[in-house]
Image 1 (cartoon, one colour):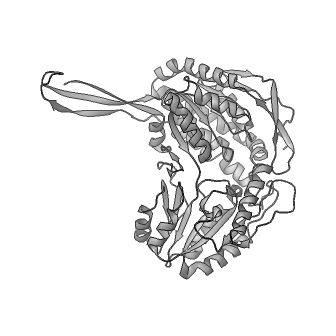
Image 2 (image 1 turned 60 degrees about the vertical axis):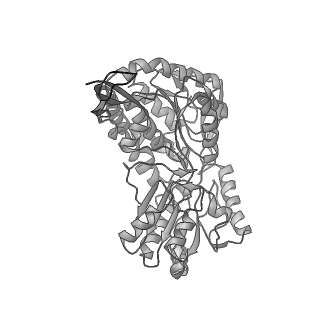
Image 3 (image 1 turned 45 degrees about the vertical axis):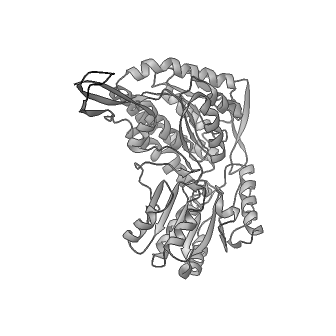
Length: 486
């Protein structure tokens, strides 16, 4: 906190310039409820100006080779890495992350890694083998060859969530910039200050207009970016409800879409699985960042033979999930992002109780300042319950029994979501066969660890498209085929 100047003037960034706004709004530390800064309140006009600046910069930026563009990303990674330790206090105060999460994941780790990964040029073009083309009314007989090119999508509006602001925006803008796009960043209103700081760093490195940052609490900004023809693509991470509205509105101008939306991760446990390993995996994510992570295994679907022992084991590990001051090293579970979100999570838990679920752990508000929710475990759940079907985005886990692999798959697939699922079984072959049947974009077997360069995205209401690794570059490109007589 000592490094945060509450009176600092934060500005939006358009065409390489820091722009003051007429209005501002408070950013509140969820750990203390104290105001730690005042964010600029941009307007729809600001958003349109940012999109126009990005469009103006697009021609010269995409004209550079990928090698040249990647050099900019490499320089950005070096500068960010040198400064990032100074950002920890700010990021922790904005997000409410525990000190360990803030240091190792919010500011370092994947944030810098994504700039580094995309600073290495990739060959994106693919030659087509010659084919025989018979004479026709269109053309004489010939051999036709060609090439498939990856061209930039254009101006990309990157609309990011509050849970991991820096990591998420890096995962969008690094591949987008490497592919030759220009970007307008619109961070979540709850914690935009570190994104502004990132934008200031990038504006010292990249040409004017290549990276723009618009901040505000009004939906007017996002709507302007979705509606304008100056934006060619929307990359959005957030709720499925908002994603559906973006898809509908973006259709008017045929926006390209990349959307990573809600999740309700299922974790299947067979009767012969390693219960302690599965419980350890669940526990490591249960209270992680107070459950504000879309890939969390919040639906535990365990075989009836191990149902009671699983509940007992989860109850036991919950005693070590210390809720408290996010700045204390011993704290594992800090606050959720806002008072309104805390109220939403509490209402979510109450809906489960009202529907007949049994509260095994938690269920009541910790008696302390800040927006805290106790890790909560609900058993006796049925597939039709709201707590089973919808995402809490808080430290809430539900447990259901199954009577065999096919039944487990049926229960797992009964959700509208399909982002990340998990299978714990006695052997990898059995886990793999179950995993193939899950309607989920990603499946981890006997582990909760993701492959950070595997394609990431969801089935059903969990999103459209894939990013990360090479798929991230493809996501921010258009496919162009060029052919000619051989």
